Length: 230
Ligand SMILES: [Mg+2]
Image 1 (cartoon, rainbow, N blue to C red):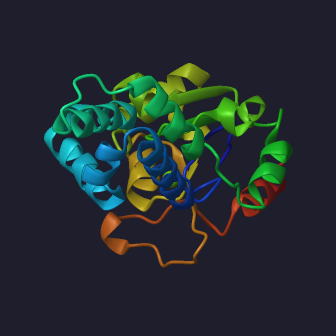
Image 2: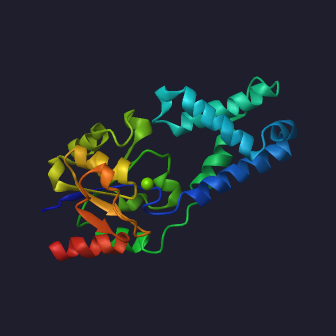
């Protein structure tokens, strides 16, 4: 296969996302305890998470927009405490800043540096990671997120949007990501080539159909493979 560009998932492909999400919950809780103790008491972290899940289940029209889901969650938590207007901008800054304090896997940055210039890389995420805040924007030609396109992976249309932006045929693009369904199945259905970043060495879940074109342990293995293709 002749690969001319990459689309690249972010969360759990370049860094583990759970520690950042947990830190964001803790930071928000600490902020509430200091400035809005009533709200903090009414909505300890597990209750806030349950409320967020409730909002997500209710607002399926916002399935592509985690930011909007979280704003609604915060507003509801404050409303339930008799506060009409939640300080959403401040709350969001507290949350978002921790959410983007990610710790890259050790192979991620060297791999992005090795890719630089040789293969255009487009980030393709359902999440709300911010490349500028994380400090890796320079390694990407373009950023596509579900929030902006209104379409989330595994819907093939978000991959087609990336191909159109790159001006390439889908089969000239290798999509790289950790999630068998969101990344591999979604990209395959759109006609892209697929690289599964399988950091824990799991077997491919056969019920998802054909295995990915590449099953790789980490980002270094990806660049090794690309370089070997010449
Ligand atoms: Mg991922």
